[in-house]
Image (cartoon, rainbow, N blue to C red; front, side, top):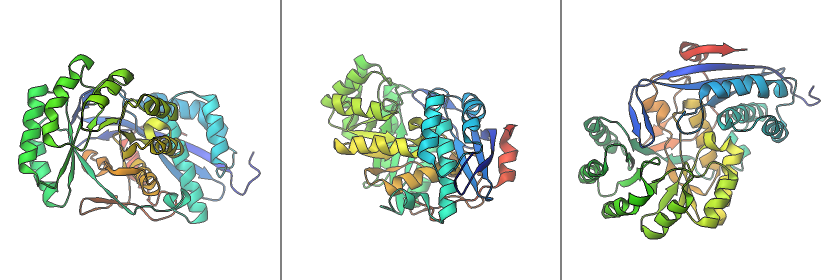
Length: 376
């Protein structure tokens, strides 16, 4: 039992199915109608509630079902009766009890930080050292298999002040990728930044030849052209192509980040809470990258408002995550928003919440609407 001021008294996990209002196609796979996830609610004897979100993708990290099982069977017994203020100790115990399950661990840490922030009336970004930035440039992904729909979408958001576009490539063939990039470069303002993301969609023996064709588009970066563990191929590409190469699936953990630095297989890196296992681990990845002069980008899975809010706090307090972020899924991709007040996007910038903890309020009725199984 806890000897501190607070004690965790309950943990509820809802396995959810997010309905989608926008189709997504990536080099490693696509989503059409719904996306599995989970919502975590941790209660305390002081009446303070913390919220967390599990946002996996089966082809990328893991499944919602395995994470829910891990939380209920292995993490919950370590948390009930514990002091939620002892986050480092609790997360260390969880790491020793259960390998993997990075998304579930991220959700638990998120909920604990939410509790601590509410306990002391402090936003998570302030707890992490303060707001280095209060607004984050939003990167809009062009990933709809219906490209004409994406063209209309790009025109619409460009007119509203959005200026960063990341094009998903590697799923429709090289010639089609070039046509899509040509079209976007023609219709977007000259000031617009265009990035591309292959999501592991290229073969190493053809990657350099194809990527050389992309250099004419003055891209900000090329993300994850080859498979996750093909570090040597990534290094060869990074050494050959002038456009910066970004690692995403190749860097999950701090140890992966060390390998990235040693082999110099990337020039920039995508920081994601779900693949790293939470805010603290994500900031460790960023710190290792920063020490080597490798800049960070705020990446996202198919995340609802809770996880997007946590990501915004992380980017706000981490100077090296300086290439913008893509926290748009709760606004444009998911058909249900579980937040009472949606995250704000103004003039192409995501506004970082400033309230205690995550700085957001959960609509529990909305959670119940998308829940397919509740574990109490």
